[in-house]
Length: 302
Ligand SMILES: NC(=O)c1ccc[n+]([C@@H]2O[C@H](COP(=O)([O-])OP(=O)(O)OC[C@H]3O[C@@H](n4cnc5c(N)ncnc54)[C@H](OP(=O)(O)O)[C@@H]3O)[C@@H](O)[C@H]2O)c1
Image 1 (tube, rainbow, N blue to C red):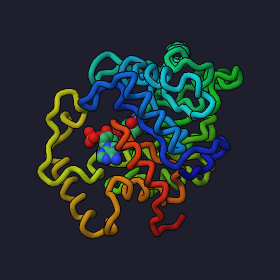
Image 2 (image 1 turned 60 degrees about the horizontal axis):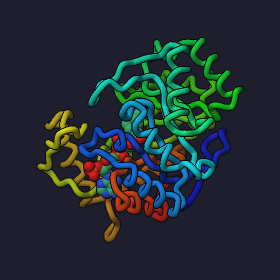
Image 3 (image 1 turned 90 degrees about the vertical axis):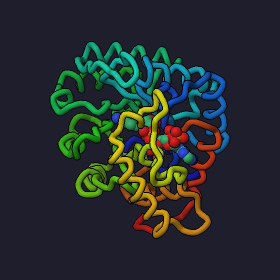
């Protein structure tokens, strides 16, 4: 594994982290504690030290599975979680952004994670109105002073470019941006990633495998019909077009002998603004394939 400094947090994070939306059960699979413990245990062996989770991947369910798995190894992990929602059922969330609501969510996350501090606490893809609350950032600043939060971050929404929030990160005390960035979605290259570089922000590239479409196992014509798989709700025509694009990438860009998932992660990591990728992972085998991206050197500007 190789490590990079996460912007001005100074934290040294593994270039490949672990995304854990999957552990909440919305990707067509329910996870047992044993599976999660084996995935995270193997992650530690491979040198991975970064976990991304959230309050609403299940009702603090992903956090609770992680909390149990890392208990006894807490110091070895950098745990990023998020705030702003309450899980109310499969793909349904209630938005809760008042300072009091968020403070309660923080306590619930600390309890679920079985820890007394969160390394990175991220604004979870809220609106600009939710973002523009001075009282929210003041409350969170006090939690940083109290030692419950080490650093603040913004996981900006993918519904629009969201330059507004990215450009104001340093102003509200955030030192990390999490953004959708992958070979099929290069939008952040225009303004968001340069704004991160200007403010010396760490950047976590989320959805780096384009929700699995860049994993190499889905060919044109593949569909997602499995019950409780978030991808079953997405526009089928858009997925079909993206899989055609992936096929072109496979033929023209993927070097011979290189696995597509690792290549797609290394592709993100070569952008000079990107600190780490956080691919979602369902099995130890996926974790191992993703970790190998850290060893791939792709030509680039980095
Ligand atoms: N608003 C937010 O803050 C937000 C939103 C979305 C995601 N996130 C975070 O970002 C993380 C990553 O995004 P994501 O999980 O949505 O998408 P992703 O990382 O692009 O794709 C994850 C999916 O790809 C497949 N996969 C992963 N590794 C693989 C491998 N080596 N070989 C083959 N298939 C592989 C798995 O699904 P299958 O095996 O079923 O294909 C997995 O569920 C999430 O887990 C979450 O932590 C945050």
